[in-house]
Length: 157
Image (cartoon, rainbow, N blue to C red):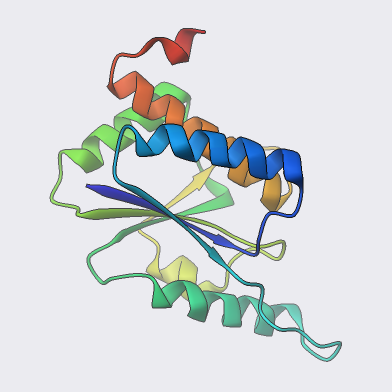
């Protein structure tokens, strides 16, 4: 199974970019992994939030295959402990899914069309984080879950 992470808008802050790159390098050693950054929708002062989210959703959908299992990182999603997230991944690895796709949204969240397409919604916390911070936290948690599945010591460091 391949894991793909799609992020709407780029990460601007250097320390976050460095952290994300570090974890993505580690992830690639454990599983086939691809990270895609979708540029922000071109906006004008006239464009409202719903139009922006709709344009971002169209761009995300371009990267999704009908057979992909799509997980949105959303504050209204299900919260999982790290061990439970590892179990979630194990179940997906043991299924017939070829590509597991995680989508991190922009600052306005997700359009309803993406929520409808999603197979699962995952929340990292009851707290609210910037969309850029979520990318770092998720990358670390994905790496942690993969090390749990591989019985590596990272989880207990």
